[in-house]
Amino acid sequence: MFRKILLILTVALSAMMVPWCDAAAQMQWRETTHTVSVPSLNDPRQSDGVEIFSQNGAIVVRTPHRVQVKVFTILGQLVSQSVLNPGTSELKINARGIYIVKIGNVTQKVAL
Image (cartoon, rainbow, N blue to C red; front, side):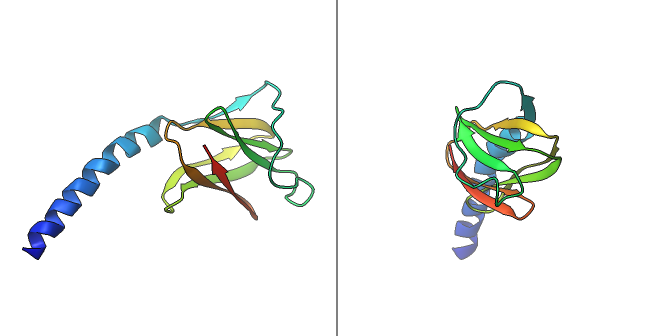
C-alpha cells in the first residue's frame, strides 16, 4: 500500500516538473536598452553597484560590471544561471511567484 502511494506521488511530481523544465529551457537573459525607472530594493552603494528588481513580469538586473547571476524558485530550484555584461538585462519568466536572485554577495527576493 505504501509503495503504491509513493509511486503515485512520484509520477505526479514528475508530471508537474516537465512543463517547468520546458519553460526554463526557453528563458533567456537579454540585454535591454530601454530606460527602467523602477527603483531597486537594495542600495547599489552597498551592493557593489548591482540593482535587482522586477518589472512587467521580468527580473531586471542593472550592473556596472560583468557579473554571474543565479535565479532560484522559493523552493531552491535553479531557474537560470548566466553571466551578464554591464548594463541592464532582463529575464522574462512566465510563472508568477517569488524568486531568489543571487549575484556575488547580493541575494534578493523578487516577486513577479
